[in-house]
Image (cartoon, rainbow, N blue to C red; front, side):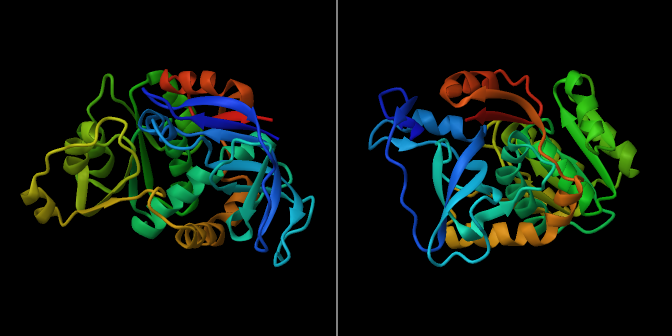
Length: 322
Protein backbone atom coordinates (compact mmCIF):
# COMPACT_ATOMS: atom_id res chain seq x y z
CA UNK A 1 0.00 0.00 0.00
CA UNK A 2 0.99 3.66 -0.38
CA UNK A 3 1.67 5.74 2.73
CA UNK A 4 3.27 9.06 3.62
CA UNK A 5 6.44 8.23 5.54
CA UNK A 6 8.24 10.82 7.62
CA UNK A 7 11.94 10.40 6.92
CA UNK A 8 14.09 11.85 9.74
CA UNK A 9 17.01 14.00 8.68
CA UNK A 10 18.99 16.99 9.91
CA UNK A 11 16.76 20.06 9.75
CA UNK A 12 13.59 18.04 10.18
CA UNK A 13 11.63 15.15 8.72
CA UNK A 14 10.75 15.00 5.04
CA UNK A 15 7.35 13.54 4.01
CA UNK A 16 7.74 10.96 1.28
CA UNK A 17 5.14 8.73 -0.40
CA UNK A 18 6.33 5.12 -0.26
CA UNK A 19 5.06 1.61 -0.90
CA UNK A 20 4.89 -0.37 2.37
CA UNK A 21 3.11 -3.56 3.58
CA UNK A 22 -0.53 -3.38 4.67
CA UNK A 23 -1.00 -3.47 8.45
CA UNK A 24 -2.31 -6.55 10.25
CA UNK A 25 -5.20 -6.15 12.70
CA UNK A 26 -5.66 -7.30 16.27
CA UNK A 27 -8.84 -8.86 17.65
CA UNK A 28 -10.29 -5.50 18.73
CA UNK A 29 -9.35 -3.66 15.53
CA UNK A 30 -10.77 -3.15 12.06
CA UNK A 31 -8.92 -2.53 8.82
CA UNK A 32 -10.07 0.70 7.17
CA UNK A 33 -9.60 1.51 3.49
CA UNK A 34 -8.91 5.24 3.70
CA UNK A 35 -10.68 7.54 1.23
CA UNK A 36 -9.69 10.86 2.80
CA UNK A 37 -7.53 12.10 5.61
CA UNK A 38 -6.36 15.55 6.75
CA UNK A 39 -3.44 17.58 8.03
CA UNK A 40 -3.42 19.53 11.28
CA UNK A 41 -1.36 22.58 12.23
CA UNK A 42 0.12 20.84 15.26
CA UNK A 43 1.74 18.18 13.07
CA UNK A 44 4.04 20.61 11.27
CA UNK A 45 6.25 21.80 14.20
CA UNK A 46 6.86 18.16 15.05
CA UNK A 47 8.58 17.63 11.70
CA UNK A 48 11.46 19.92 12.71
CA UNK A 49 12.11 17.89 15.86
CA UNK A 50 12.10 14.52 14.09
CA UNK A 51 15.78 14.33 13.12
CA UNK A 52 16.72 10.79 14.16
CA UNK A 53 15.05 7.40 14.51
CA UNK A 54 13.05 5.13 12.25
CA UNK A 55 10.71 6.52 9.56
CA UNK A 56 7.05 6.51 10.54
CA UNK A 57 3.67 7.08 8.90
CA UNK A 58 2.23 10.56 9.38
CA UNK A 59 -1.35 11.59 10.11
CA UNK A 60 -3.85 11.57 13.00
CA UNK A 61 -7.33 11.17 11.44
CA UNK A 62 -9.16 9.46 8.62
CA UNK A 63 -12.42 8.69 6.86
CA UNK A 64 -12.98 5.42 5.02
CA UNK A 65 -14.75 2.07 4.87
CA UNK A 66 -14.15 -1.07 6.86
CA UNK A 67 -12.71 -3.91 4.79
CA UNK A 68 -11.82 -6.44 7.51
CA UNK A 69 -12.78 -7.17 11.13
CA UNK A 70 -10.78 -8.48 14.06
CA UNK A 71 -12.19 -11.53 15.84
CA UNK A 72 -13.53 -9.58 18.85
CA UNK A 73 -15.18 -6.73 16.91
CA UNK A 74 -18.93 -6.70 17.43
CA UNK A 75 -20.26 -3.20 16.74
CA UNK A 76 -19.27 -2.77 13.08
CA UNK A 77 -19.48 -4.65 9.78
CA UNK A 78 -17.42 -4.80 6.60
CA UNK A 79 -18.58 -1.93 4.38
CA UNK A 80 -19.43 0.46 7.21
CA UNK A 81 -18.38 4.07 6.60
CA UNK A 82 -16.35 5.34 9.54
CA UNK A 83 -14.06 8.15 10.65
CA UNK A 84 -11.58 8.21 13.50
CA UNK A 85 -8.93 10.16 15.33
CA UNK A 86 -6.05 7.69 15.06
CA UNK A 87 -2.35 7.80 14.31
CA UNK A 88 -0.59 6.81 11.09
CA UNK A 89 -3.61 7.77 9.00
CA UNK A 90 -1.84 9.03 5.88
CA UNK A 91 -2.03 5.63 4.24
CA UNK A 92 -4.29 3.55 2.03
CA UNK A 93 -5.09 1.12 4.86
CA UNK A 94 -5.08 1.71 8.63
CA UNK A 95 -5.73 -0.64 11.55
CA UNK A 96 -8.06 1.12 14.02
CA UNK A 97 -9.33 0.14 17.45
CA UNK A 98 -13.09 -0.41 17.25
CA UNK A 99 -13.79 2.04 20.08
CA UNK A 100 -12.16 4.91 18.23
CA UNK A 101 -14.59 4.64 15.30
CA UNK A 102 -17.35 7.18 14.64
CA UNK A 103 -20.02 6.35 12.06
CA UNK A 104 -20.20 8.72 9.09
CA UNK A 105 -23.72 10.08 8.39
CA UNK A 106 -25.10 8.87 5.06
CA UNK A 107 -25.22 12.31 3.43
CA UNK A 108 -21.64 13.22 4.35
CA UNK A 109 -18.80 13.01 1.82
CA UNK A 110 -15.45 11.40 2.54
CA UNK A 111 -13.71 14.78 2.56
CA UNK A 112 -16.25 16.31 4.93
CA UNK A 113 -15.91 13.34 7.24
CA UNK A 114 -12.11 13.53 7.23
CA UNK A 115 -12.40 17.12 8.45
CA UNK A 116 -14.19 16.06 11.63
CA UNK A 117 -12.74 13.43 13.98
CA UNK A 118 -9.60 15.05 15.38
CA UNK A 119 -11.10 18.49 15.87
CA UNK A 120 -14.47 17.20 17.14
CA UNK A 121 -12.96 14.94 19.79
CA UNK A 122 -10.48 17.66 20.78
CA UNK A 123 -13.05 20.45 21.03
CA UNK A 124 -15.46 18.23 22.97
CA UNK A 125 -12.67 17.49 25.42
CA UNK A 126 -11.91 21.22 25.66
CA UNK A 127 -15.47 22.56 25.85
CA UNK A 128 -17.27 19.83 27.78
CA UNK A 129 -14.83 17.70 29.79
CA UNK A 130 -12.46 20.51 30.75
CA UNK A 131 -14.40 23.71 30.02
CA UNK A 132 -17.61 22.43 31.61
CA UNK A 133 -19.76 24.64 29.39
CA UNK A 134 -23.21 25.40 30.77
CA UNK A 135 -26.17 26.42 28.57
CA UNK A 136 -26.33 30.17 28.14
CA UNK A 137 -22.66 30.85 28.86
CA UNK A 138 -20.55 33.08 26.61
CA UNK A 139 -17.70 31.46 24.66
CA UNK A 140 -14.75 33.15 22.95
CA UNK A 141 -12.99 31.18 20.19
CA UNK A 142 -9.56 32.50 19.22
CA UNK A 143 -8.02 31.74 15.80
CA UNK A 144 -11.55 30.83 14.88
CA UNK A 145 -10.87 30.09 11.22
CA UNK A 146 -8.61 27.15 12.13
CA UNK A 147 -9.85 23.56 12.10
CA UNK A 148 -10.22 23.64 15.88
CA UNK A 149 -11.87 27.06 15.69
CA UNK A 150 -14.61 26.23 13.20
CA UNK A 151 -15.43 23.05 15.10
CA UNK A 152 -15.44 24.82 18.48
CA UNK A 153 -18.02 27.30 17.18
CA UNK A 154 -20.29 24.48 16.03
CA UNK A 155 -19.90 22.38 19.19
CA UNK A 156 -20.52 25.35 21.49
CA UNK A 157 -23.62 26.27 19.49
CA UNK A 158 -24.93 22.69 19.53
CA UNK A 159 -24.47 22.48 23.31
CA UNK A 160 -26.41 25.65 24.03
CA UNK A 161 -23.85 28.44 24.42
CA UNK A 162 -25.51 31.80 24.86
CA UNK A 163 -23.15 33.92 22.79
CA UNK A 164 -20.17 32.86 20.70
CA UNK A 165 -17.49 35.43 19.95
CA UNK A 166 -15.03 34.51 17.19
CA UNK A 167 -11.75 36.29 16.52
CA UNK A 168 -9.52 36.35 13.45
CA UNK A 169 -6.72 38.50 12.09
CA UNK A 170 -8.31 38.27 8.63
CA UNK A 171 -11.45 40.25 7.86
CA UNK A 172 -11.95 38.05 4.78
CA UNK A 173 -12.57 35.01 6.98
CA UNK A 174 -15.20 36.51 9.27
CA UNK A 175 -18.26 35.96 7.05
CA UNK A 176 -17.55 32.22 6.98
CA UNK A 177 -17.44 32.16 10.78
CA UNK A 178 -20.82 33.88 11.04
CA UNK A 179 -22.28 31.29 8.67
CA UNK A 180 -21.39 28.42 11.03
CA UNK A 181 -22.75 30.02 14.20
CA UNK A 182 -20.55 32.83 15.53
CA UNK A 183 -22.73 35.57 17.02
CA UNK A 184 -20.06 38.27 17.26
CA UNK A 185 -16.97 38.68 15.09
CA UNK A 186 -13.70 40.34 16.04
CA UNK A 187 -11.36 41.58 13.32
CA UNK A 188 -8.13 41.75 15.28
CA UNK A 189 -6.50 43.84 12.57
CA UNK A 190 -8.81 46.77 13.40
CA UNK A 191 -10.55 45.94 16.70
CA UNK A 192 -9.52 45.30 20.29
CA UNK A 193 -10.91 42.11 21.77
CA UNK A 194 -11.58 43.76 25.13
CA UNK A 195 -13.81 46.42 23.52
CA UNK A 196 -15.91 43.81 21.71
CA UNK A 197 -16.23 41.55 24.77
CA UNK A 198 -17.20 44.50 27.00
CA UNK A 199 -19.92 45.49 24.53
CA UNK A 200 -21.27 41.96 24.05
CA UNK A 201 -21.26 40.96 27.73
CA UNK A 202 -22.04 44.29 29.40
CA UNK A 203 -18.48 44.21 30.79
CA UNK A 204 -19.02 40.90 32.59
CA UNK A 205 -16.53 39.03 30.43
CA UNK A 206 -16.64 35.61 28.79
CA UNK A 207 -17.17 32.37 30.67
CA UNK A 208 -15.05 30.11 28.46
CA UNK A 209 -12.18 30.67 26.03
CA UNK A 210 -11.02 28.07 23.52
CA UNK A 211 -7.58 29.32 22.61
CA UNK A 212 -5.22 28.14 19.86
CA UNK A 213 -2.98 31.21 19.96
CA UNK A 214 -1.10 30.88 23.23
CA UNK A 215 1.36 33.52 24.42
CA UNK A 216 0.41 36.25 21.96
CA UNK A 217 -3.20 36.25 23.19
CA UNK A 218 -2.62 35.34 26.84
CA UNK A 219 -2.83 38.80 28.42
CA UNK A 220 -5.99 39.66 26.48
CA UNK A 221 -7.50 36.28 27.38
CA UNK A 222 -6.96 36.93 31.08
CA UNK A 223 -8.45 40.41 30.76
CA UNK A 224 -11.67 39.34 29.03
CA UNK A 225 -12.46 36.35 31.25
CA UNK A 226 -15.35 36.68 33.67
CA UNK A 227 -15.16 35.75 37.33
CA UNK A 228 -14.77 31.96 37.46
CA UNK A 229 -13.91 31.94 33.76
CA UNK A 230 -12.07 29.03 32.17
CA UNK A 231 -9.21 29.37 29.69
CA UNK A 232 -8.63 26.16 27.73
CA UNK A 233 -5.39 26.12 25.77
CA UNK A 234 -5.48 23.81 22.75
CA UNK A 235 -2.69 25.39 20.69
CA UNK A 236 0.23 27.78 20.81
CA UNK A 237 0.41 29.28 17.32
CA UNK A 238 1.43 32.64 18.79
CA UNK A 239 4.11 31.40 21.18
CA UNK A 240 4.57 29.09 24.15
CA UNK A 241 5.86 31.37 26.94
CA UNK A 242 3.74 34.07 28.62
CA UNK A 243 3.77 36.07 31.84
CA UNK A 244 0.87 35.66 34.25
CA UNK A 245 -0.67 38.12 36.68
CA UNK A 246 -1.26 35.84 39.66
CA UNK A 247 -3.33 38.48 41.44
CA UNK A 248 -5.74 38.65 38.49
CA UNK A 249 -5.83 34.85 38.42
CA UNK A 250 -6.88 34.80 42.07
CA UNK A 251 -9.31 37.73 41.98
CA UNK A 252 -11.24 36.29 39.05
CA UNK A 253 -10.82 32.70 40.29
CA UNK A 254 -9.75 31.74 36.79
CA UNK A 255 -9.05 28.15 35.77
CA UNK A 256 -6.22 27.62 33.27
CA UNK A 257 -6.32 24.22 31.58
CA UNK A 258 -4.15 22.79 28.82
CA UNK A 259 -5.38 19.96 26.61
CA UNK A 260 -3.54 17.74 24.15
CA UNK A 261 -3.64 14.16 22.90
CA UNK A 262 0.13 13.85 22.59
CA UNK A 263 0.45 12.60 26.18
CA UNK A 264 -2.69 10.42 26.26
CA UNK A 265 -2.59 6.66 25.99
CA UNK A 266 -5.04 4.58 23.98
CA UNK A 267 -7.42 4.07 26.91
CA UNK A 268 -7.64 7.82 27.55
CA UNK A 269 -8.22 8.55 23.87
CA UNK A 270 -10.98 5.93 23.74
CA UNK A 271 -12.65 7.52 26.76
CA UNK A 272 -12.55 10.94 25.08
CA UNK A 273 -13.93 9.52 21.83
CA UNK A 274 -16.80 7.66 23.47
CA UNK A 275 -17.76 10.71 25.54
CA UNK A 276 -17.74 12.83 22.39
CA UNK A 277 -19.96 10.35 20.54
CA UNK A 278 -22.44 10.28 23.43
CA UNK A 279 -22.83 14.07 23.48
CA UNK A 280 -22.48 14.98 19.80
CA UNK A 281 -23.77 12.11 17.68
CA UNK A 282 -27.25 13.66 17.31
CA UNK A 283 -26.06 17.10 16.09
CA UNK A 284 -23.57 15.30 13.84
CA UNK A 285 -26.28 13.15 12.27
CA UNK A 286 -28.64 16.12 11.88
CA UNK A 287 -26.00 18.20 10.10
CA UNK A 288 -25.76 20.79 12.86
CA UNK A 289 -22.10 19.77 13.15
CA UNK A 290 -20.33 19.29 9.85
CA UNK A 291 -16.87 19.14 8.39
CA UNK A 292 -15.68 22.51 7.07
CA UNK A 293 -13.34 21.81 4.14
CA UNK A 294 -11.15 24.59 2.80
CA UNK A 295 -9.25 22.66 0.15
CA UNK A 296 -8.10 19.21 -0.95
CA UNK A 297 -4.80 17.79 -2.15
CA UNK A 298 -3.88 14.31 -3.41
CA UNK A 299 -2.06 12.26 -0.77
CA UNK A 300 1.15 12.48 -2.81
CA UNK A 301 1.06 16.29 -2.51
CA UNK A 302 1.25 16.35 1.29
CA UNK A 303 4.24 18.72 1.22
CA UNK A 304 2.26 21.20 -0.87
CA UNK A 305 -0.61 20.90 1.61
CA UNK A 306 1.81 21.74 4.44
CA UNK A 307 3.03 24.83 2.56
CA UNK A 308 -0.56 25.92 1.97
CA UNK A 309 -1.38 25.55 5.66
CA UNK A 310 1.65 27.62 6.67
CA UNK A 311 0.39 30.43 4.41
CA UNK A 312 -2.54 30.77 6.86
CA UNK A 313 -5.11 31.70 4.21
CA UNK A 314 -7.41 28.75 4.86
CA UNK A 315 -10.69 28.53 6.79
CA UNK A 316 -11.41 25.04 8.09
CA UNK A 317 -9.58 21.84 7.24
CA UNK A 318 -7.09 20.90 4.54
CA UNK A 319 -7.85 17.42 3.21
CA UNK A 320 -5.73 14.73 1.57
CA UNK A 321 -7.61 12.45 -0.81
CA UNK A 322 -6.81 8.88 -1.85
